[in-house]
Image (cartoon, one colour):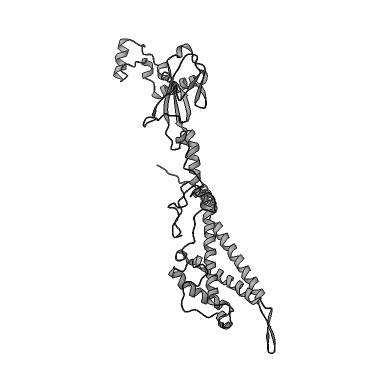
Length: 397
């Protein structure tokens, strides 16, 4: 085999299969840029004045590695910014392209929304489980009631009937239906027959409060009703409960005059509230190792990214050429010997690689969600300071 096979000659066309992994071989723009980048790198290394001790295949390998490294850094950036959003999502969901093409990420709350939805279920401000109503008929001195046998499980709040069965019930609130607060300060027997006619003219019908209340603002009535309800809640004994294994214990113990009365309660069914689909073991994003980012498509990389790739390819080529030339410290010549620059090329290439990676990571950090939010806050604060110092206009007339 001729030693000249391992000397660089400028390629005239790109042949599929010359790169180690063939990741981007099917991309026409990658193929055309390969020739351009090879020519650029070779000229920066001294070709054609100086011989380069590797062939075009080695140059293609450097170019492919540079594109792959850029893709990896971008994927690291996306993972840091969006991992929380994708946590628990399907690894084959619509948020990821099957071709590896980058798509705009959508801030949907991700795990934050899933967690807040589950916690909100307990305070009735979120969640997707249906709340049901049920009731038990009180028996004098009976304090413990079995919800699976003693309770009447009625209907969903605003929905269909409840399916009882042996599902574990999670009682949220126990209450009895007392008289409306308005009945405690409206006297249906107050006033004379003439007053009742007057009340009817105001639209009260059979509810006949004293005339003195009619002429007051409605806000007075609302404030009074609220005060009465608060008084009953704080100063009077109401039913409280504890629930253990579907056994409801009421406090205080029902008295004789409570016999036959109903106690109502709101509850969730445990299997409805617990989302059994939240399984992170099968086809779900659980950590950076299975978030399905792929190699980015080369023809979607902008000029800024391609410029970084070109420089990184040059750094890789310097390192590779330095490794090759470091095999011998010098070469003999008829009138002496010539020292090889392998170690210097290796050092220079590795330093350029480190600097390029640091430059890229610094830029990506500056445009991260966290830094962008901090920048927007600074801009808003600065604008507010300017507005605070601007005098207000004076309008006359």
